[in-house]
Length: 254
Image (tube, rainbow, N blue to C red; front, side):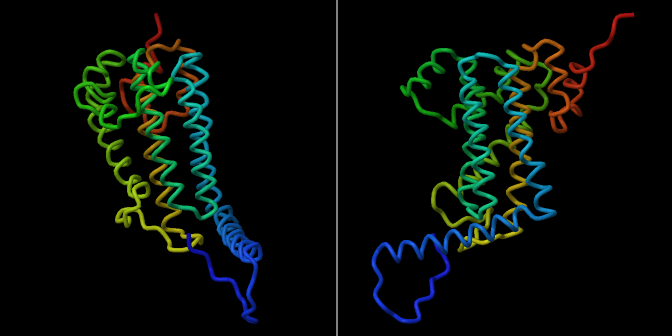
């Protein structure tokens, strides 16, 4: 982690504790400066718009009830909060890493919900998360088989949202594996960077779309109409999908 070098005009040798105090003091100052710029307008409005996804995940979890995979959604909600915290302090690499983890946790929970044995094995640390399994074209959550089991009429949309998930995962992975990012530019020091800040907002909105589509695909038809309508206001753009619009507004009996 690069920080601005501390001033030491006297050149006197300093103890390890003094050097650490200077280093972390400088780090704190840089984080504080990024924090202030991140929460000044119009940036605060952008953060507020992105932050609502945390409460939307909590709503899904509440409506799904005491299912075993529910704890993954809770962890995903907390990780999204950490992602925002990293973002507003200028820790952009970690903000994108957390964004990828939220995507992975959310889709993993949905994938495991269709296989009780694998879910129990994952919760007891006997198997690991497999992104390849999550997005598998034959068995994954964006496969025709999975769709037909839970929301068959969304079949024409799974390829689109599955492609969005794959691309977002690949892009955010640049910040995980230590490569020089090509698609996500990162400042070399801890400082506010408007371009990277806004890029995170765009990626967070894609995450929100993918997550809501996948959650709707898996759980929507299992919910009573009253709970489905609670979700209506927080399904970004999804009500534009005619199949979901029809579910939210069923015809009334004459």
